[in-house]
Image 1: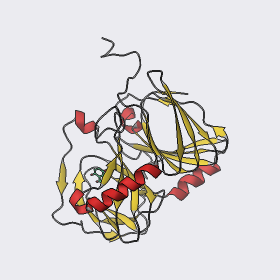
Image 2: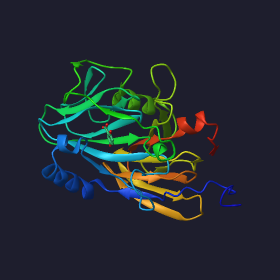
Image 3: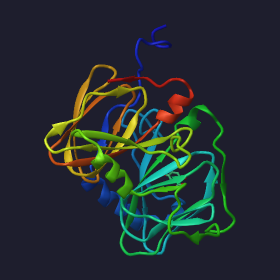
Length: 290
Ligand code: GTQ
């Protein structure tokens, strides 16, 4: 009985971390071995060590995607929702349903369900970003339709800004910096005021130098990414285990559901995270303890 209706959430995922120093060379090696159009999406999947692909947490899939100059990740659309956090590079772009938006470091770019999208790169050097998708849902719901477009690219035009699908870092950091206290959380909103999607949400956090964030645990899970700074997260899992993860710029780490987290910053730090709070809220499953 307790396996079916446990006294507390019991995620299968565990805490995991991927250091940018270690995985960036692997991603570049993938770039030498596999062409972007051959892969369709060339992504180093961040698979939770307790699970298989597509699980980074029980409900979130994340991976680091690479595009090299001149390459195209061909146009397709799917039921799954995707958001991207831009990590490195310039003049890469994502085209979403006819709008071509240039990727800048720290941008969040959305690919809503069933919108045609392709990625390309008109600059120099590698273009790398973190993908967050709701792919684990489709292990339970067999409803992830996907379709390839007939051509490599869906016709698009470059736009200066696309408020519905692109949130720049500057406004996020301005909001975080305007807040009092040594820790602040920014919740990304769509222009209509709601969360970024029905399933996946985004947040950013500021933790001042030599301070720690208050302990929080939520029934949603997170894939965190260090945008700037360094420090560690002290994590207490739902099963009582404790783990400390060190992070620095570029690192990504998974925080399973119902894990208490405290971020301890060595220097002024900014963390981005994709979460599944919208999904849980929509299903009436969201809980928070603070
Ligand atoms: O860019 O559309 O990481 O379809 C996995 C599946 C990215 C994408 C991923 C995808 C995409």
